[in-house]
Length: 330
Image (cartoon, rainbow, N blue to C red):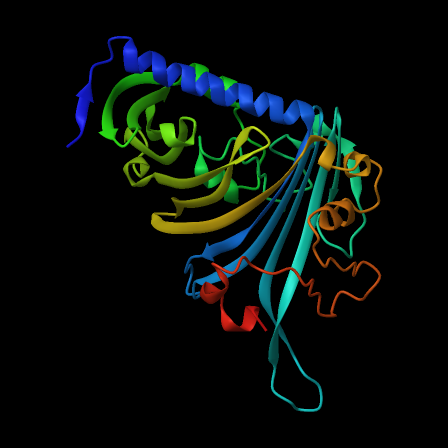
């Protein structure tokens, strides 16, 4: 049985201190520098008559102070038309893209075949940006606040400190086994986002479950919004870091509600474990140093023709290999 807890300062103060501690851990991580490899599966839900499928996905993030590189890679099944009257055949196809931010500049390369484009960061982040992003913006220390960000291509709109300052305590209860469930809300105009977070003392008060809903809004489909995240944690060099993130969320295509899912395992390199050249804004290909850092069998196909199969030999975690489509494991 769970025990209700009144917001009389005790548990409310605990929640506030936990959020503050989490923000501090994130700031320390970025100040010293980190690299993260997230490997897992993304769902591509059915839409407009297309069949849904599961796509193996790799995300690399390298961040330190005012430097950030995002790398995204998805293994899809590409169809090739054979010559000589033979039937079409399918092969796994790996698509890479990356973005590097340094101060006021950003460098973007949406495909191995295309050139890198450099531009002011202010231009890139505008809504009318002529270079649409193709890279997942993966910040594992923000994902638990909004888990579906694992699958978003736009830059995070809020920092941890901004969102933390907007969260208003509603209630909390003890679930037993050192777990506390807290309900918090943020309000923008006539829309309320409700966060239900379960903190675990066994993992230094880190969240193990986050659910986000919209209980009040002037938007017709807002009641269908759901974001859910579950987390596993590990202690590495004195820091508690997520080793697995499972997420699910709804999106909309007109009035159609579409459900997305993802399951990622994360590996980390911290501080001095990261070579300096990983933070080189002028690197011709930031994928190479990050792939070397995480011992990926990365292959550069930038000099080959677009029609050729591009297959980099990175593998899914063993826990997820059985769930990938057969054609994507060959």
